[in-house]
Length: 67
Image 1 (tube, rainbow, N blue to C red):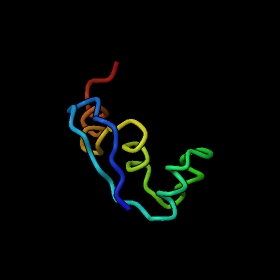
Image 2: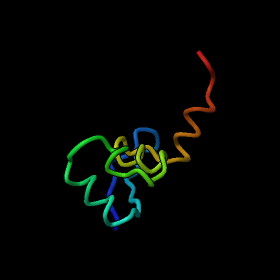
Image 3: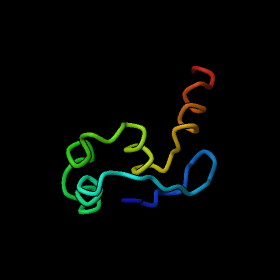
Image 4: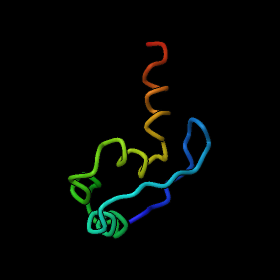
């Protein structure tokens, strides 16, 4: 199942991820926490579903200067 993700806060591009049909339906139903709805989906994909942040953009944020 393909799911459109929110616009990325870093690059401002929209995105799409492909996930297991059962887990995708569980996520889209909005019941419970995403970790419970999508236990076999990677943390990076779950993050993109929630915030829109692409994995490469997340890496860019995390490799920046430490404060």
